[in-house]
Image (tube, rainbow, N blue to C red; front, side, top):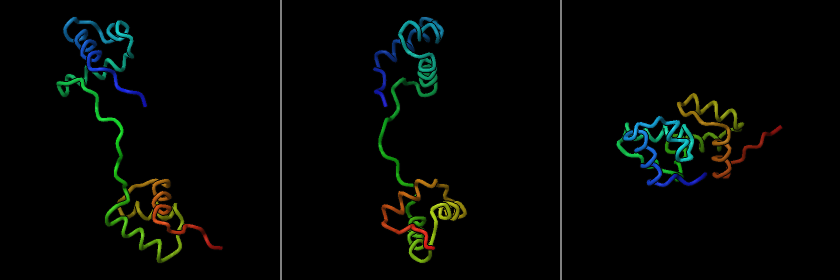
Length: 117
């Protein structure tokens, strides 16, 4: 992921649209940025009063936590399971997760997920 544009550039572009009356396309051509970028900056200024970039990066908390985590650990230890089956059971309990999330959880908790024949 790239770095956000500088505040100086953002302010000059938005100033050209708001104060000089340039269209968003003209401002984009003048400053060498994308049209959609100018549109988003002007919208952000009108909605929040600032053109500062939003937060980048960071970590999102895991979806399988708390009561769902406890239930899932207990469920995996008591009976055989498939990952797709666990996804469906979690959906029935009100937690929408994908296959990959369940796989990562099972792997991190060192729970076996092999099918027995």
